[in-house]
Length: 150
Image (tube, rainbow, N blue to C red; front, side, top):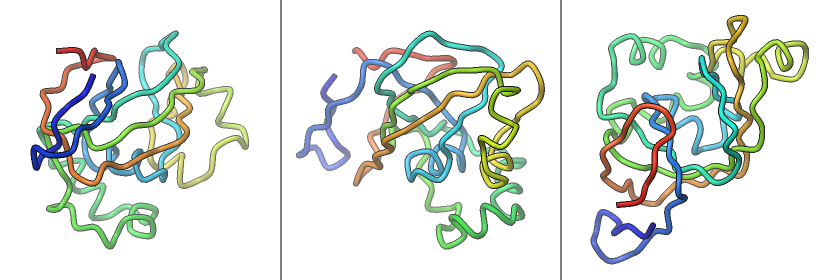
């Protein structure tokens, strides 16, 4: 799908599927600082994925961004008030989906572990090739994997 960028001039090709994430995790993903997304459910989908920053920024997520040492080292220079909400902010490639138990023994870094919920029984989605958009594209998100088609 092609979408008008915020300025109405540039056009952006969006992948067919999207995933909404709460900030600051959406920003961490598109900047390539978070390469595993943990979910309670698996997907068989593999391929390009638009990353949508949810329209709300829960207080618990704000506290995480303000206090987590890995976050401070990684994105501490980006104040949380600058993080876009309610918009597609970039893309990644979803390359694998496996049980968290398969990736918690030396596959992921301590930083990556801090950025996800690796409780037993959950699923780890491996992400690659992150791209951050120059301008967020305002968009209504949804739960689960959703279509960017109009």
